[in-house]
Length: 107
Image (cartoon, rainbow, N blue to C red; front, side, top):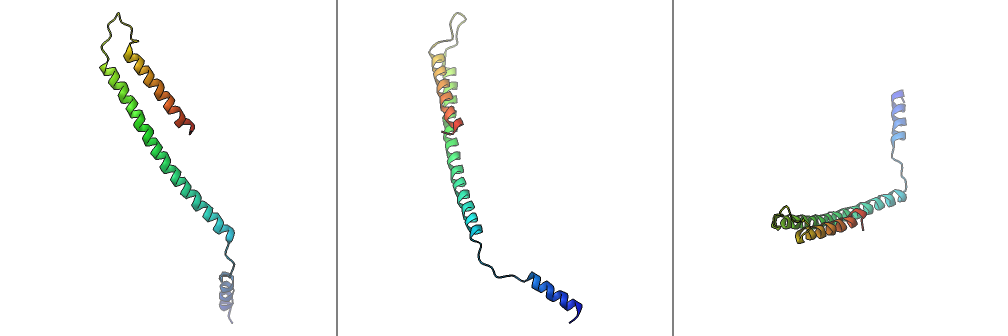
């Protein structure tokens, strides 16, 4: 047996695949990661759905602000601007502020 044959035999022995039992901890860890990824994807879909609903509600509030602002009669210099339109705008603004708050806290 030559030196090359001995080196080849040693390398073959070193790189030979050893029979070993399946790694149950690794399999469990991967299963948990897959389950967590599935839950995260479901939460992401729910968050986008909630965002679209809140964006539509926000757009409706902004449209109501714009509509009330445009429909209001032009105030004269001797009039206070605290008419019904201003009260409705204040009410819509307060509702919008309250509606946004739960979205910020995640509730």
